[in-house]
Length: 304
Length: 272
Image 1 (cartoon, rainbow over the protein chains, first blue to last red):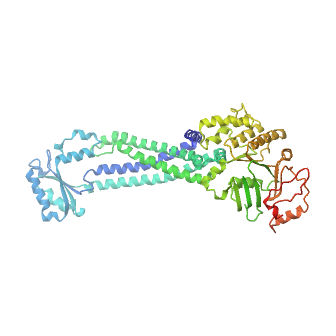
Image 2: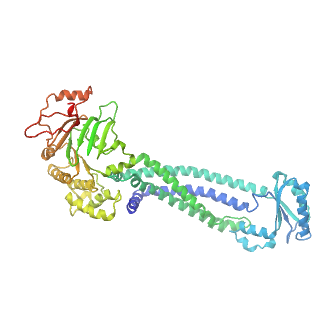
Image 3: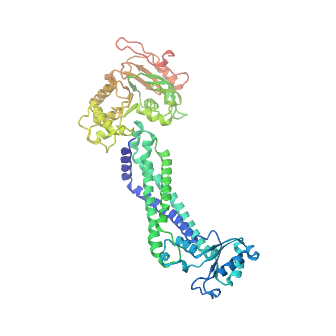
């Protein structure tokens, strides 16, 4: 099989069928953009969960410089206060509700903060001193948050006790719903894309039936006859997938990076680089979509 | 080269078979005409040789191989050994003469240098020197058919099937085409030509196999389009054949004539 020959066949097929090829590109572009949007929302949720979200439920923030809470009258939490809190957490009264707890020092907090806000300009203006140390508690029963809150809020050296889940859960459920919507739209669009690819390949096979008839007669192999058609669909789908990846990158770069991160500096957004990690998946999906649907169409409409 | 053993082809269960227990052998290097009215089974015969269709019963051997035993992915190899020419030429209108012939080599993966060497040679054989760069619509019908023949034989097949190749051409041009086919036959290619053209058959004096309603009613060497041998009782045998009351006689026993000695080749000879 001559590569140059197959390539010229593909070229002539794409030229002859230009309007259909463009519509395939656009439909795969739109459908894969929706798939990618769902993927981006999930990435964004992960980003916002940060280091602790999946590990603990309750955070006890200790006093730091500039804390104004009543328990912080004596200034930043001292070593002694920390040890007291640790003892209290280990005491039977509290320990029965606690699975596990970890201490996050100011340096640890800074490290995790840098990871989470890597894409945000805020990261440069924060120093370890500004971040509070904290105890991160994994609850046996997350519903018992109130007990921890009551016990620790009034302790010396404690700035605040926060149930992180409650804070973020509503936002995440909204984002999950949005990605579900995106996935359903993508599903419908993918069906459109499959049907359109099938129709395009059918038209292409019809407009080249003279050539394929002669190829059959002179004994061209099934591969040589079918490959140009399949590659035609695959190339169109890959272009569509590349456009979709480009769009997602642009959204991350210009919208999230340019607009949103300035309006909500305390929220961690995903970087454009992270959205590009979706690109191989989108292109792969496009190739599989086009390859399978054109193969099935050819089996019906192209005798070899 | 081509052997049909008791081959029957039924397209529609209710209608009569397109081919009915055909026994026929065409040897390597032979030139045979397939004649008969439309619907007599000529095209079905050619389709079975190409494995475009499958015989309902019986066996078709091409180059010693039973085509029923050729798996679908090896069918292309079978077809590379068979060239085909049609009444309607079937050239690619946007490709030049050279490109049309080269196409048959490109699609089976021949290298560019082989194509460059072979195509002009074949075009010379069919008498189209100097017309390499013409487009099909710039050629006469006879020239177009020569391009089609060049394409059919460029890969040096052992068999050339021609389905009414002169059907669209005037008598003089047709004779030119026959000259080309004869030349190809002289070079060792087996040629089977289905035709209605009595002038050509009479002129060529080659083997003639006549089909009627899917049955071979005549098989003569160096014969004419219509049999010159009055066959006694032919109408009764035909009636039997179409009524399928008995194994139809696959051959007509022709009395040897002094001027045209008949060479009977059909396998059904013994039963007749």
